[in-house]
Image 1 (cartoon, rainbow, N blue to C red):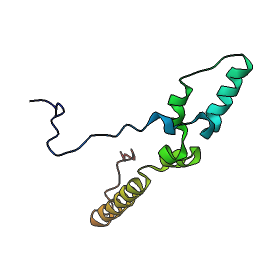
Image 2: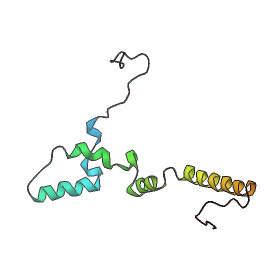
Image 3: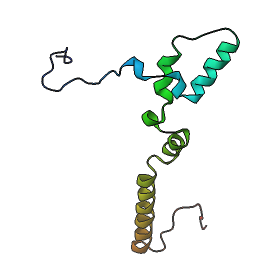
Image 4: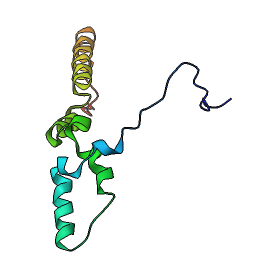
Length: 108
């Protein structure tokens, strides 16, 4: 029982760790600004390079792309469900005319 424990079983590596030398703070304007602000105070962050991958558009897209993904993820399925709901409701109304929806219109 349990995980693979490094025995392979023909599945290959679960992920490939990229070489740390491919990441440069200079490739990321946001982190370059942080580096310059630290330099103005006489400071340096030797680990700043480790955050570059988070800001590269080829990894996660631009901020606008990520925002669109956040706002519209699942939109087509939600819209399809909306249309199905409307169709079912209209069909129900045709099959059961005058049954109303029980909106509290009690007649005494």
